[in-house]
Length: 234
Image (cartoon, rainbow, N blue to C red; front, side, top):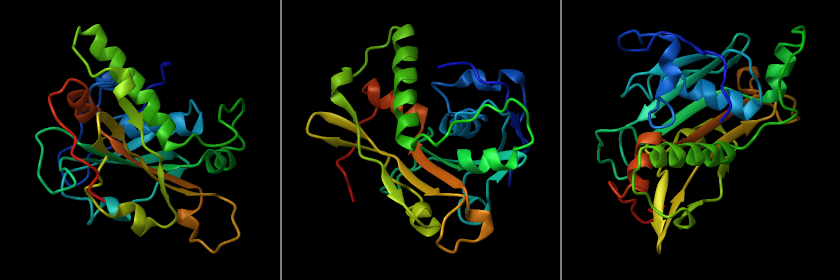
C-alpha cells in the first residue's frame, strides 16, 4: 500500500486526548490506529489531502458519534471502534470500525481553488478498502511467520448498501465476519449520498460516504485461527 502523508488527529471525544505522533500510522495494518478512518478516506476518494480524524471513546456511539458529521473543508473524518460482537459479547480487542467520510465529488467541490489537487473521479467502495486491508494484513502476518488460513478460504461478501443514516447506524454491533461452510466471509456496510442529487437531503448529509468494516485486530485473529466467526446471524 502506498504511503500517505501524515494525518492530523484531533482530541478523543468523551475521554482523554489522544497522543499524536508522526509515527501514529505505523501501527497499521495489524492495529486500528488513530489515523485509520483518515487513511480509509484517502483511499475511498483517491486523494492525498491531509485528513483530521476525530476519535470517539467506546460507549459514545449513540450520544456523540451518531450526531457527528464529516467535513470536506477542512477534510475531517470521524472514527468509532466497536469492541462487541453482533450477539453483544464484549471482546478484549477491536471488532469493528465505523468511519464517517466525504465523497470524492464533495471534496473536489470544496477544494476547487486548490492547485494540483489529487482526487479520484468517483469513490471506491468500502468493500474495495476491505480487499486492500485484507492484502495488507496477510502480508504483515506472513512477514511475522504466522500460520494463516489459506487465502482461497477467505471471501468478501457483497457490500450492504443503505440510503439513510438510521439504517447505517443500526445495529451498533454489526456482524462484520461470518463462516459459511469452510469459508470466512467479510462484510462491509455503506451509506453513500451523492453531493448533487434530486432527492431532498439536508446539506450536512450531502456528499457523505460512510463505511462499517472489520477491525484489523479481529481480522488477524480470524486468519490465524485465534478466533472463530459464527454463522450469519441476520
